[in-house]
Image (cartoon, rainbow, N blue to C red; front, side):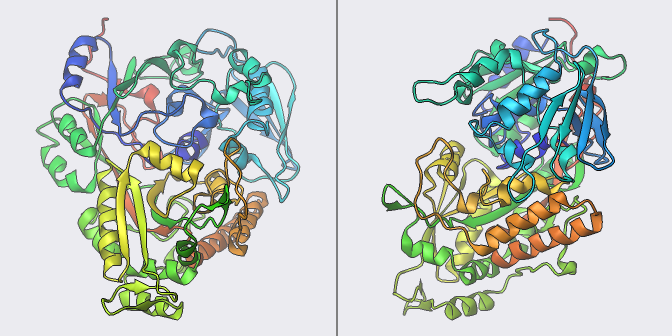
Length: 591
C-alpha cells in the first residue's frame, strides 16, 4: 500500500467507515442517488485539502492523488501508477521513471515530468515548506535528500547519495499540479511565509482543487459531508480494461459517534461500516438478513497506545509540562510500572470481545521486520505487584490512604485524553483510569474533540498523557517521522513546528537518538537479514524505554453491502483501495 494511504494520511488513526447522523442521509440519498455511488462516513471532517499540511485521518488524498508507484496491499508488491515503468542502476544510486503517455490533471491539463520536478524540488524538498513527507525522503546522518533530473517530458531520474532501501516505496507520494500551485510556492504573505502553506484549505472552492487520482472533490459541506465525483481524466479511466468499476460518486458523511454510525448502517443508510468489537456479534447475526458481508483482513496494520509527554522544554518561560509531572513521566520505571498495571488481557476480552491480540511492537505484524515476543521483544503482561515494586524502587511511596506519592510527597495525578466519539478508545481510556486507580494513581480522564487534541499534540504541546493510534504498513521507514527526534510525528517529545513559537531547553534522550540512528541504518541497508536485525533493535529499545505503551492489535473487520461488488478487503488497504474496480450493482444509471 502507498505511503500516502499508509502513513502520512494519519498518522493518528481516526478514519472509520461509519454512517450518518439523524435522518438526513435518507433524504440526501432520495434526492441525489441517480448515479452509482458509495456512501461511507467519518468521525471528523478533513482539516485541509493541502497534502503537505495534513497529519491526520480522515483526509481526501487516497482518492484524489497518486504517486509514481503504488504498493499492492494484498501482495505488498510495487506496481506502476503514474509511472508505467522504472529502472534502477546497478549501484542502486539512480532510479529512472517513465511516465504513462498522455497523463492529464482533473482540469484536462497535461501531467508531465515538470510536475514531478515541481512536486519534489519546489514542495517536498523545499525546507521552507513544512511537511512530514520530507522526513521519509532523508538519507544518512546528515539527512541528505534526492536530486532530480529531467531526461525528457516522460522520463525523470532520481539520484541518491547512498543506497536507500525504502526509496521506491517513498515515490508513492502524491504528484502535485505545477500549473495550479507554482505561483503559491514562489510568493509570500505579509508574514513572510510562502502562500502555499495556507493554500487549499477547506474553505477553498472545490473546483480549484486540481487532482490526478480516481476522484475529485465535488462538494464540501462543513460538518455534514464531503462529496467526490469520478475524475474523467484519471489514467485508468482513459485506459481500456484498467478500471472495471462504475462508482461515479463517493459520499463521506460526518458523524458524531460510532453509535449513530451503526444505526445508520443497519437501516441501509451507508454502504460500509467498520466492525468494532462491540457490534461484531450483532452484525454477524444480521448479515444475511440485511444483505451485507463482513470481511476480515487479519490483524490491523495500525497501533493503539498510551503515551506521556516527555517534553522538558519551556515556552515563554513557562514549562510545557508541570515539572513535577515531567519528572514522573521521564522516569522509565514509572512508565514501565504503568505498563505492568494495565490489564490488557481484560481489554482484549471485554472491549475487543477477543477480536485481536496483545500488541508489543510499533511495527505492523504484516511487515517482515516485525519482531515478536518469541524473538526477545520485552512485553508487559499484567502484573500490579511488579508495578508497585518498580514505583517504590524509583522513590515513590504510598500514604495512609494508599494513594501514590512521589519522594517529595506530591500526589501522583495526571490528565489522560483521547478523541471523543471513538467508543473503543473511550472504553480503553476508562479501563486505564480504573487500572491505575488500583495502583494509587488518580487519572483525570477527558475525551476531547479531535481538532483540540491535534492542536495540543502538534502546536501547544501542553498535555500530560494521551491514548491514540497510528496507521501502519510494511516498510518501517514510513514511520521515520515518528522515531526521528526531528520528525513531525515524534509525538511523545515533539519539537515545535516551523510556524509555532520556539521552545527552550528541549532535551533529546540518548535512547531517542539511538532509535533515530538505527532508522538511518535500516534505510541504507540493502541486505534483508541485516535490515531485520536493525529494526529488531529499534523495537527492543522502544519496548524497554516505552515512549509508547502499546495496547491491543485488533482484527481488521468491515461490513460492506452486497450491492458493492469487487471488494478485495485487506488490513493494509481497507475496503476502497481498489475503488476504480468497485461496482454498485443496484444504482440507477441516470442523473
